[in-house]
Structure formats: C-alpha cells, structure tokens
Image 1 (cartoon, helix red, strand yellow):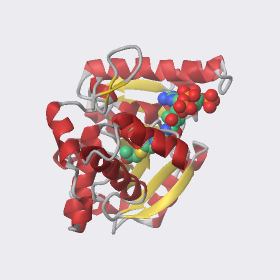
Image 2: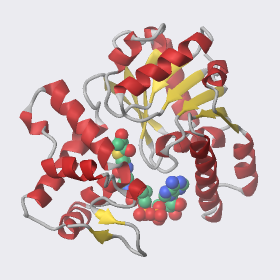
Image 3: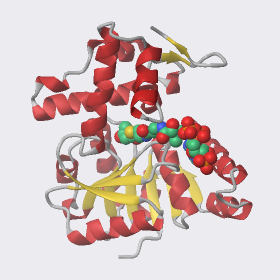
Length: 291
Ligand code: CAA
C-alpha cells in the first residue's frame, strides 16, 4: 500500500518530532491537536529544530522550506480521516487514546492504517476498540525523534502482514531502523530502560548516591549519553511513572514497583524539563539538582 499523507494526533514533544521527520522525508503531514496553542508551539519547535539541522549542514535551507510546506495543522479531527496512515501521539493515558479513536473512526477511509505511538499500552487492547484491528499497530518513536535511529513496530494479535510491511516501508523512507516487538507490556526499549531509570531513583531514594553522582556514574562509567535522572527529566517523570505502572500491573511482579520518590515528584507536578523542574531545576542558566 502506498502512503503519502500522514495524520499525527497530538502536537506535543513526540507529535511535533514525528511531523518533523515525516515532512522532511516528503510525506504530507496533517498535525492535529485539541489546543491551538499546542499547534502553534509545535510549529515553532519544528522550525527551531530544523534550523539547527540547517546550521549543522545536515539539511539545506530548501529542504527545510519544502518540509515546512508539507505540514498543515488543524483542530478538526475529521481532517485526520483523509490520510493514509494515522499516528496517534496524545498523552499516555489509555482512556484518552480510546476517546480519540472513538471520535476519529467515523471519519476514517477504509484503507487507512491506524497506529499509536504509545510507549507501553497494549496494542491489542487499543485495536480491539476500533473497527480495524487488522490495520492497527504500534508505531513507537524515540525522543528526540529527529535524532534517534530506532522505531519499534509492535503488532497486535490481529495485525496483518500488509500493515506491518507498509509501516516498515515508511520507517525505511525516514532512514530509520525498525525493531519488531511483540505486544507485551512496554515492548522492548521501555521494558529495559524504565526499570533502569526506576532503579536510579531508588539509588537516590536510599541515599546511595546524589543526583549528580548517579548521573556522572552512568555517563562516565557506562558510556550513556545522558545520566538516568537527566534522561528521566527529558522523557517526563509522569511518562516514566505511567510506564512503570504498566509493567507492574501487566507483569504482576514486584520488581517493577515504581519508586515512591518518583511518585512524589509526579505528585508535586515536578515532571522534568517540560515543567522546568524534576530531578534538576531548569529555571536558571544551568540545571541544578533538586536533591
Ligand atoms: N531536533 C533535531 N536535532 C537535534 C535535536 C532535535 N530535537 N536534539 C539534538 N539534535 C541534534 C544536534 O543538532 C546534534 O547534531 P549533530 O550530531 O549533527 O551535531 C546531535 O543531535 C547531538 O545533540 P547535541 O550536541 O545538542 O547534544 P548531545 O550530544 O548531548 O546529544 C542527545 C543530545 C541526542 C539527546 C543525547 O544526549 C542522547 O542520545 N540522549 C539519550 C536519548 C535517549 O535515550 N532517548 C530515548 C529515550 S526513551 C524513549 O524515547 C522511549 C519512550 O517511550 C520513553
């Protein structure tokens, strides 16, 4: 199946990154959100990130202009119905995703493939509430989308081969690499990454190390590009907690219990970079540890 027009639902951190890479690869993108301000903010972010790629010599000015012309934004979910492939990238709450699909389904063309960028929610369960479980799958990008090479493709129990192959060819057109994952809680990347981040929070909680010593240890001692607490702030502490809860509930093993300190940060609304405070305080010139 040929894909030319892509609908992206949700203009947040992941949605704007997805729109960015799709447009740069020549796809027509319809970016939808319920909030006009989020759409405006997304366009500013895309422009800023593309300018950074231009200044590094990774793309030309013309490529940037063409890519920006490939993106339209809309508050109307019905506009998403006119696309060949939909990637839902709204907040990581299952009821939000079900509600979005419910509103979208009446507008969808029969051939449209429906996917979710969920980082952990069951693809089979999301698919079962739609009219097209065979044309539904997980399409999971990593953050920052323009930089990270991997896309996890997750088949639900009913996903057919044509859907998988079509999504795979889209990823190839982006110049990224597919990892095929089975539909079990948190798939591959987050199944491994989140328990490590959660363990870093326990290491802080139990006083084994400070924010700085934990991050330095993993950067210099394990060659990670970011320390685990810095990475947690980057991903969003609410997202990290939501994924740990999916692992804990879905696998019923106490080794996945979220650290109480992670829960406390989320309760405080200290969600990381997006709220300017998490394990670091980002309100000043340089990030300062909050513990
Ligand atoms: N858009 C476009 N380009 C960007 C960018 C963005 N948003 N962010 C960074 N870049 C580019 C920079 O321009 C730079 O390009 P060049 O290599 O061509 O010079 C390159 O990326 C590196 O950036 P910086 O020099 O600014 O900074 P850095 O070397 O510290 O790298 C980083 C930044 C790429 C984010 C790096 O720290 C890193 O890889 N961190 C780990 C990220 C990670 O683990 N992500 C996965 C999170 S898990 C996930 O996403 C799954 C989930 O479901 C939660």
